[in-house]
Each structure stands twice: as C-alpha cells, then as structure tokens.
Length: 415
Image (cartoon, rainbow, N blue to C red; front, side, top):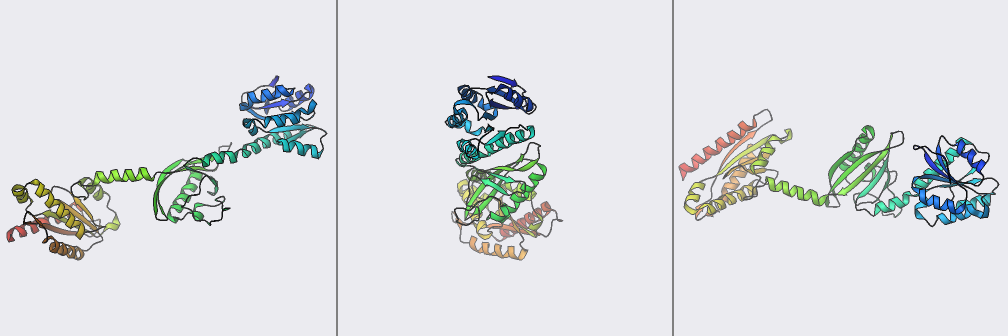
C-alpha cells in the first residue's frame, strides 16, 4: 500500500488500481483536493478498506483489475454494514451500458471515465459522498423514532422536513400517506394560539440564530399537557442558517409537580386560602385590567373570647369555618388571602361596591347558621373600591381595614 499524498485537512480517498502510472496521474491531478491511499490487489483493498473506513470519504476502483476484482470487491463489502455509507466510484474505460448497470446494482454510486478531467472528477466524488450521506438518513430516522422525544427538522421557511412522531396535537386526515413535510405549524396545529407563537419563534430563530428552550401548555382533545421545546439553527458549511432542528419532550408530570409545590408554597395549610406570601406577590403584579378593584377586609369577631374559654382548637375551627364561608360568598375570580391569625383580605377585579355589598349581605345571612361551642360565628367586614391604578393600593387596603374596624365596633356595641 502506498500513501501518495497526505494532508491533515483534506478528505482521504482509497484508490484501488493496478496501473501505477495511471494511479500517479490521478493522485497528482487531485492532490490539492484529496489525500490518497493506493492499493493494487483485492485482498489488500478489502483489509485496508475495513481498517481505515472511519477516515475515508470515498473509494475509486478500477474496473480493469484482473479476475473480476472490481465486481468481487463490491460484493464482499456488502457484508460489512459499516462500509455501506462510503461511496464507491468505478474507474471505467470500455464498459458497455449493461456492464455499468451491473456495477450500479452491486452498489457502485458513479463512474470516473477517461480522459480524466479534474473538475468533473471532484464533483462526481462530492456528489457521491452526498448521495451516500442521504442514503443513511432513513436508518437515522428509524433510530430517532425509537426515542420517546419528538425530534423534528424544518427548512429556512419554517416548514417541516420531517418529524419522528405525529402527535395528537395536529390536525390531519386519517390518510396513512399523510405527511408533515412542507407544512407549517399554522397549517397543522389544533391549538392556533400556540401555533402562532411557534411560527413566530421559528422566524426569529432563523433571523438571529439563537437557540431557544421554553415550555408551552397544550390542551388538545381535552388532554392537558406541558411540552418543553428546544430549538437550534442548522447551518451549512458557510455558516449560513438553512433550517431548524428541535426536540419536544413531554414534561407534564414535572410541570404539574412544580405547580403543586408552588401552590403548596402559597396556600395556607389551615384554611386552604392563599397565604401572605402569595398576597404580596399578587399585589405587586396587579394589571390595569383588574380595575375597578373591590377590596374586602374581613376579621373574626370575638376570636380571643373563643380561644380563652374553649381553647385554641376551637379558635382554629372558628377560623376554618370563616374561611369556608368566605370562599362560598366570594368564588373565583375573587382572590381570598389569610394575611394573619384571623385576618382576611379579598380582592374582586371588576366588581362594583354594590355587587360586593350583595355578597356580604348573603354571607351575613349564612353565617347565622354556624356556631362554635354554642357561640355564634360572626365576621366583621370593610369594603373599599379602587377605581384605577392612579389610586394608592396600600391606602385603599388601609381604608378597607378602617371600614372593617368600624363594623367590628358596631358589632361589639350591639352584642
């Protein structure tokens, strides 16, 4: 075996040719494009091919080798799966069309013919490499389909080239020949809102080339799921963005657990109401569309008396009953917070004072049905309506508290 050219940055070609002068001519002609390893005999060519296949780009084999060596070589390398991805080009001189077809059926990809033309040979080798790379794609796709994650590829217009799985979030006919290829999210996603977000995200990635990872909530076919989508640009040899490769993982279990833990962090364990931590988060994130905002301050009457005479277990039950009554009178979208021992704050976005007073009147009627150790349950209330964001929120809460204490004083005078 001869190594006639060697350069670390060039592709390597295995040249199987008996005529040394002809081999030298080819190697010299293509020296600036390829490294060459030259062998002359069949057995040596097979062993060399198997040994250096990991660094080979292609094989050139002379059809004029003795004892039908070219045909035998093509037949024997079929036994080695690893070698199938390396293209074999036949150096042809006098072959007829039927003979060439025979070589193609045996696995040859193309032919190099005399007289040798450098540019034509380089292009034939490059094309043969690309063909073989493409030929292995179905096998790669088959392997990817075995993974639980969904992997997909899109072109430079955000259109699908392929996806390893077709999930139930897509709108398509039951036609078994239906394909995702050539379609955008806008055309096939059931959830049109998420489809728009996905398409816009694709276009932005194609512009800026920045990887993205985010979680979306999908509710298709009454199935709530959370999907994590990770996208990255596909680039060609010139570093130009030619498409998008992405991975979709179903993270529903993790997201539901995360939300459960978040909810536990913001829920008062005794009453099931939102706690003070969530109250502070809520008031810091109030949006303009929350106004007018009705604020109700509530407090248990005579809780100290119940604690002192019946014990704190009875006092805790008093607080729980009061919380249940508040939830009954102020259903969602009202937000109810236990901000202290027996102190509650309720926020009702978009509610008028008249609507709130109707609910309080209903609650005052219901509360008469409940007792703790023969002691009547009683709740003091104070209401203030914040008309717009120009008003100071803390001042409005203070005013609701002030009105509640006035109601508490009135209760004590009458009892």
